[in-house]
Image 1 (cartoon, rainbow, N blue to C red):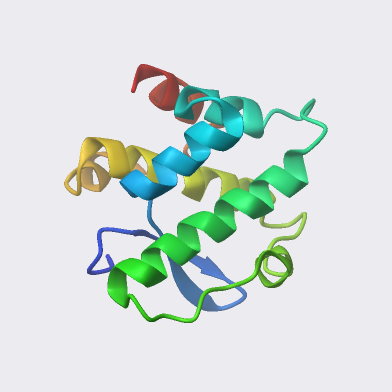
Image 2: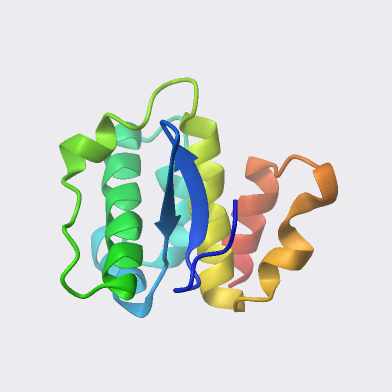
Length: 134
């Protein structure tokens, strides 16, 4: 997948590429909803009673931020539509993409070259550590 012009992190869902953009607006909304972006790892905790709802909300936010960064008049996706893009088979991939988009959004555009894994799988633990460091 290629990099998007807006600096969004690309993720493929149901055969279509979407961008995930952790803009300042997105960080503000995450802070408002969860009490701080440092709580991001708690969102994906299996003990979170709102795990699926929070994942859907966050993915919708990041996709829509990327769409708006490309075109202020873009048609935004609704949460229910985004929820149909997520399933048990790609939930971990979606969560990893959200962490990577957060890292890119807070570390800058060149961060993905060092974080593209050289074939290694990104671990949830490593992603959580990256979120907590920022």
